[in-house]
Image 1 (spheres, rainbow, N blue to C red):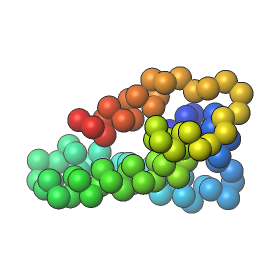
Image 2 (cartoon, rainbow, N blue to C red):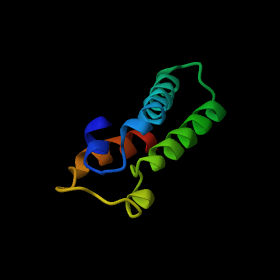
Image 3 (cartoon, rainbow, N blue to C red):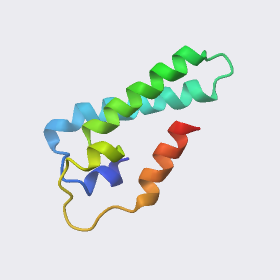
Image 4 (cartoon, helix red, strand yellow):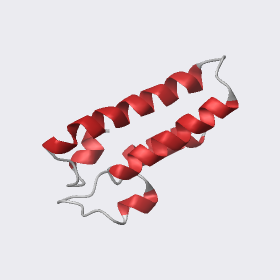
Length: 88
């Protein structure tokens, strides 16, 4: 996720805590997704939380249109993998 965010120009030192939380929320979603004990309600709530945090850094298709990208655009595959995982 850091490599994708670095290219966007929206991440600064003051955003460190928010970025750590974003990674934590994403990790929690993955843990729930792989857990046989996770309920559908828990998965949906975790998925929503991930989408909300990703949008903070311009990592959703809709939020990407509102951020300025420095230099070369990041590879679509990094974003595609994140969202493919969320949707499956």
